[in-house]
Each structure stands twice: as structure tokens, then as C-alpha cells.
Amino acid sequence: MNIVTTEQIESFVNGFYAELPDMLDPVGLSDLLQGENPYQLMQKGSSRVDDLVRSLLDKHLDHYESHWFGQLMEQLVVYVCGMTYGGWKSELRGIDLEFARDGDWYVVTFTPYPDYDEGNESLALEDNFRDATMSIERASPSADVIAINGCFYGWNPVTDEGEYVKYCGPAFWELISGDAELYKRIVEPLRKASVGNNIRTSEMYGRTVNRLSAEFYRLMCNPHGEIDWEAVAEFASSQVAATSLS
View 1 (cartoon, rainbow, N blue to C red):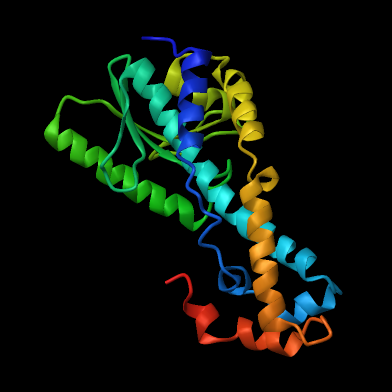
View 2: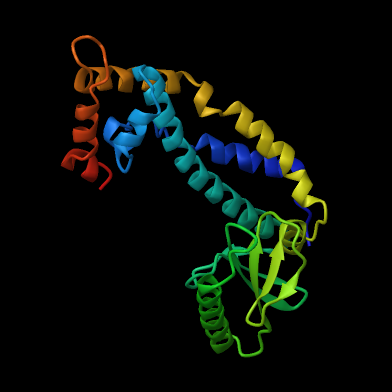
């Protein structure tokens, strides 16, 4: 087993951030207003176009960044496991990672929060793990397959759920790396990269707010500079807004 260094983790995270797409340039008002309740926006009492646009843009970014950061964490796990145990991104349905450790063949599915495997979600996990185990055992009859439901955070104890074993937080990071301190060692590389790549403090963010505010003023303000909420409702309910992301 190899130990992945903090410098290697930092290099990987910085490389991922460097590939962060320039996602603000194509954003239009239709992206921000799609699915928004125009009546509720009106009730918030905002009379400044730039304030309204900024709040809508931040909400849009929150959704995007949450999805993007989830991808970063998933790829970081695969990278670390690849460096330590030769793990690889799985091609099996519903499986995110495979690796061999201590003579066992692990199949891993990442879940977004510690109690995700409750109710209907657990049924889908069980089906995926059963299918993956049968597929591996057909190809390698002597394989001892262990199914893992892993979450990147949390302090839940390691629990055997029957079809799979649940790992969260420190126990999960140690499982895929052999390093009991890894869950803490990834903090500083992630913090430094996020501070150095804050979209909301970038020039691009300011340009986007200005561009969208100008467009909003042109389309949805009256000659006195007041927000025309009927125009906002019409725009948010229009075919343009409904199909802009298709």
C-alpha cells in the first residue's frame, strides 16, 4: 500500500479547480427565473434590480457549486484509492469505485449524506450491489466481494446492513486509503483551493451581475426605473424561460 501525500492531494484539487468551467458567461435571465415564484420575489420587497439579480445569481451558483463540489469529492476518493490500492472508477451499474484490499474485492457506492440508505434508497442500493457482486463473481468465481455504501462525512459507526456495509466520515476515508488521518489532511488543500477560486469575488461575477441587471432593466422595468412585476411574472412564465436549459 502507498500513502498519498498532502502535496499530491493539493495538486489534484488544484488541477480540478483549474478545469472549473467558465459557467457564468452563458447564464441568462431565463436561467435565473426558471422555476422561480415571481409573486414571492415581489413579496421580498426588493426595489433594486442589481440586488434582485445578485440574489438570483447566488441561488443559481449555490445549486451549480453543490453539484460541482460533489463531483470533486467523488473524483478525489477515486484518485486517492487509485494511488493507495490501485482503485478505479467502476463501470458497473450504480457502482462508483472498485479496489482490492487484503485479498478482498470492494465495490463502493457514494451517497450524499449519512442516512441516505433509508427507505426506498436502500432498496436501490441493495439491487445495485447484488447485480455488481454477481457480475464480478461470474468473471472471477473465487472473488470475495464486499459491498460498501460510503459517505464522505459523518460520525456514524460502521454498520452491516446485510447486502452492504455502511462507512461514513473518517472510517470511509481510512477504508479507501489506509490512512486514519486522511479525513483531516484533505481539509487544507480544499480550503486553499476554494479561497483562491471564489467565483463570487471574481471579475467575471461582477461582469455577470452588470450584464444581467442591464438586461433585466431593459425587459422588466418601466420608464421610471421601477420593476414591472407583471412583466417579471410574464417572463418567468414564458416559453423562453421554460425551455432555456433544454
